[in-house]
Length: 313
Image (cartoon, rainbow, N blue to C red; front, side):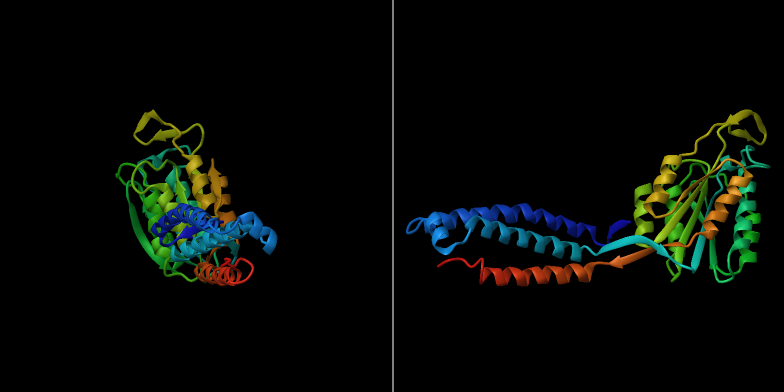
């Protein structure tokens, strides 16, 4: 579950609350001094049966809540949570950086990922649409959402490592989300990588963008503990650079799940679990609720000010 603000800059208006508190008690002090010129507050309380301190604190609390709800409303507050669905659209975001040529998978990480991805596509129902994104130092849209699964499989089979430095996971997520924006179905991103995000879009920004647009991110980490070798560089061992903590954070924050693939079978099993999931991200706009609540409190405050909390003449 996450709370997303479409207009987060409006949250700065919450800083008016301390000012309201100061003005409230400053006004109360001035009013009390004026009243003491002809009366005594304790005497008034005994005669009227009113607790003047309770009256003023109650009014202050209601007014603070009114400000909070108005600010939340104009900030475009959305509650994003997980629910059930039967219709899904997917984007496969596959890492094609040079490290994916490492041979700790047979014949290497990228080829194993391609085989598992094509099997995943075969397991989907005919209505599901699929988009394809590849990434390394930057992201490339290989295909928009389409129900032509044979075309996506052909594109995957022809993927090759790209000689672009770095791994830009954040951009891969935002690019994948953009492909899913036209979809009215549940939006799912399957992010497969063997490294860590070291350039480009900050991960938190990508997470917020995915949540804002109801995209659920499953991540698959592809690497063995032992690592492997780069083709043509048999004397160089590829060390493990998989950033599991970040991948777990991405998936957890967006309602998805992280999978660790240490061999071909676990990689295929990760895709199978994703294909069988019925979880989707649901967004509820709370703007109207907060506005109605604010106006209701405003009406209650007016009633109390003219009855139980009425200021004595």
